[in-house]
Image (tube, rainbow, N blue to C red; front, side):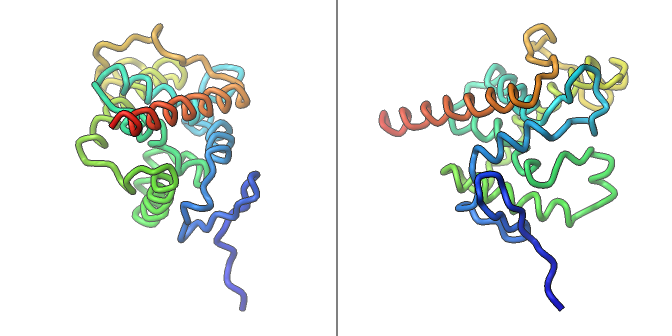
Length: 202
């Protein structure tokens, strides 16, 4: 009996072990490519293109940066908050609840490998995680009401009422995958430049 294959080959040529992922097999090009082709809301959004996890991640990082005084490291955590989905896809919350702990275990291992690859702690602090989650909920509120057919009452019930952020300030029109990939890659590079400068100034 041969064991089932537990790795995925990436376009970079890396083979990422899904059960025991190594930071050495994580590449930002693979993350950007994958997230730009994973649809939020199971693809049930208005527009000519899927609203990708890459575009969602850009929006969350933008909201987070405007809502809190934060370092480049914190912003990178925000940009990468859904990065494991480049491997495991974007499973909607109701289905995550049904699947249970196995999904979370794989997700946490991937998250740790991704963070370590880019010189971050394996997991961020609870305070930072809570702040990123608040930005995530703001993004989800606007995605739900603008793209996914939710009423404002429904969205408010699930995600809360956004404060200080308006729809017209967000990049919410669904982008072609190649454009979302480019913007995600550019934002990552800009944050890496900020992080390098902060280390030099320290």
